[in-house]
Image (cartoon, rainbow, N blue to C red; front, side):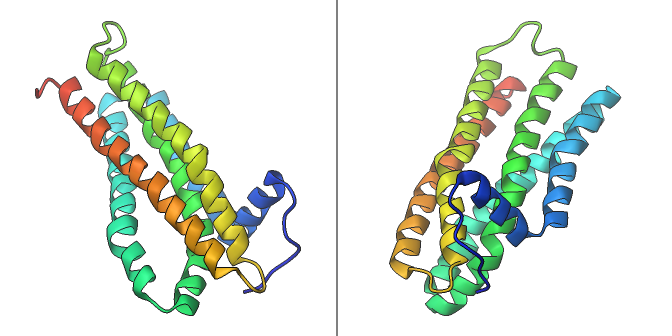
Length: 197
């Protein structure tokens, strides 16, 4: 694993994540996952906003389940060297995609609710969706971000500490599982919002 000096601040850690993920990749991820919802909202076309929200939401949901239930267990079963090499490349890219994606999905949901007129008479389903969305952002940019960033920094060292990586991976799985629970709960809220309960 190529390495530079170990970051001494969170700002330096973020710079390392951007460098490891590739600066152009990171910019593209932000522009797509946040820029498209903004353009869809500004267009005022409800159907465009709806499909933007559903597409980004499905991508986030699929990504979450794929990593937790397919790739994660596969990497856990792989030899440490192989898993470390994959995670060294994968984790920075996941951070670069998943964090702005979460903002794009939740922001597009709020924008869609506005275009549909749901904010004129908000229901318990709308407030529930908003509350869960905020909890998802707090979890994603709080403990989940901190743990995955520390894991990426550790993996970038010349001699990564495998025990530390295992502990960080376990914590990331726990916080990530909470995110999955929030995803399932917000789907229930959206079904209620559409009057299907």
